[in-house]
Structure formats: C-alpha cells, structure tokens
View 1 (cartoon, rainbow, N blue to C red):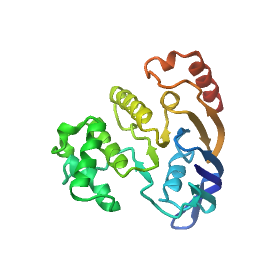
View 2: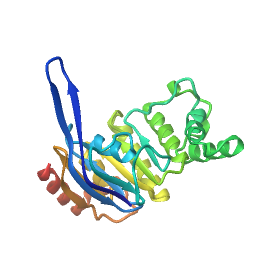
View 3: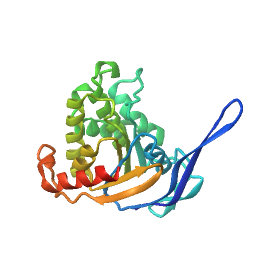
Length: 250
C-alpha cells in the first residue's frame, strides 16, 4: 500500500528582486493498493512529476505524509525504483554493466549472483544479445528497455515511471507500451506511471488519476478485463466512454 495524506509541495524561485512560490501539489490524498497499476495524467505543470518524486523520496513533502507499506518515506529506497523519460544510461558502461550498476549500488548482489540477475532481466526485456553493446549503439526504445531492466533488477515492490516513453516516436512508443503491458501482467508490481497520453493510460492502467493545478480532480477505475490486447482495447465501448468522460474532467 502506498498512501499519501494531504501532501503539498511548493517550489521557491529566488529572483533578483523577489522570490516566487509555485504550488506544485495541493493537499493530495491517495491510496494505492499493492500490485495496482495507476496512471497519473494531467497537463504540463499539474504536479505529476512532483508527486512521483515525493513518493520516490527524491523530494520531501512540505505538508502531509507519504507512507509505503506502513513506513514513512524519508528518502530513496531500493523498494521504489524510478524510470525517467530519458534512459540516463552511463555511456562508458555496456548494457550489462548499466543493469548491474543498480545491484552494486544497493549491495543486493555481486559476482556470479549479479551476473545471473543481469542475464535474467536482459532476457526479460528482450536484450540478451545486446549485453556487450554500448548505449550509443542502441535505439531510443532499446535504451529505455535497458533502463527498465536496471530498475527491475533490484526487485522493487514499486515501479515509478515518469513519462518513460515521452521522448520516443509514435511507433516505438506503442511497441514499448505493449511490452510494458505484457511485462506487468507477468510481474504484477505496483506501478505509478506518469503520462500526458490519456489513451496510453487507459490501455495500461487499472486506475487513472487526473491532476490539475496540483490537485486530484478525478480518480477512475478503468475496469477493462486483463489480459489486454493493446490493439483492441481502444475499440472497447467502455474505453471510449471513459476516455470522453476523463477528457471533460481535464
């Protein structure tokens, strides 16, 4: 269970003559059950990424509380792995070394154990044959799969994804969404997924939370049965009705 209770966060920018305060989150309260896939959707500046960083422990909420599995979030933890919009791979490390880095940093595995875990997760994302490649030799979608493997390798209970497909072209983005959908249906971890795409959210998630001006304006169960075919979901009458309703709320 992830729980946010009355969470608020402000950014303060100091100019030459005055300080500007921006309210990014305004009293957000959410409960996210274990193994639920939740999409956070909203326009730019609505607080989506701030919410994700507060749950990750990268930002401290100035008001309210965030708890994961009953423990107060006070900083980053290996049980919450983050995948960003850009893969952020180390260019001087091979694909396998990039995936291994998280294991070594968290001291979860070394030596042969680390090699086995790296191999398993590269196979999981379909990149076993690229283990010895350098990041610049991979496409954008492949780099994001490496980033996903790196996040999953540390066995997090929660996966936090901040517009992970936002920098990809439309075709690659659709393929990556389909791969993530299949991966979640096998792994079933708790996922918080930030996206600007309402269609993407409805295809992937169990639940869609709409943010506007730092506040939750709608919290909707998707209700489309799993397993899902990402090509046929948009043709579901419930998908079309819910999409229309959520667009009106945005």
